[in-house]
Amino acid sequence: MPTKRVVPVFPSSSATKSYEERLGALPAIKAEVDRLLAIAENERSPIERVDEAEDQIVEGIRRLGHGVMQSWAERECERAGAELGRLNPDAVRDQKKSSSSRPRSAESSSTSRSGGTAGGEGGSARSRRGRR
Image (tube, rainbow, N blue to C red; front, top):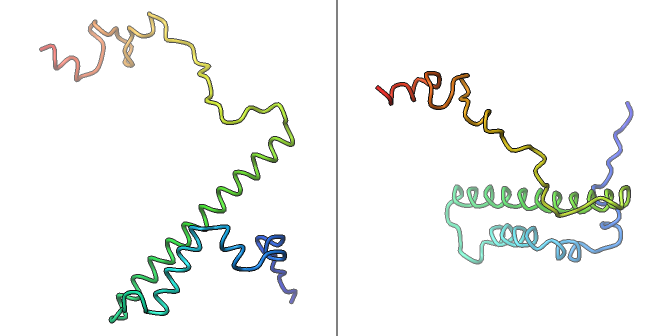
């Protein structure tokens, strides 16, 4: 049976930088790892009950996962932007898209969705009830 080859997520950074350097570049992740280490060492605020420790660890892992996903998304966005800039140097970045829709005409704005006019007999049941 063939074995699966595991490819590191960040092969270039892990090969050239130490663990401390890599973690230092990601302060949110480092903070969560520090919190988890504090729980494991049980020094800051000693935990006396196992369910309390479990709750803190589970919450810490959730925050760590969120930080990892956030970091990944930010880096991926930067990478995609750089790639777009390389492929299409004329692309405009960080500018609000202008509306290409046309303003509604006077005729279409006076017609309700039900096909009647805004002031006529057509319209919604709510507007008919209000006129009684």
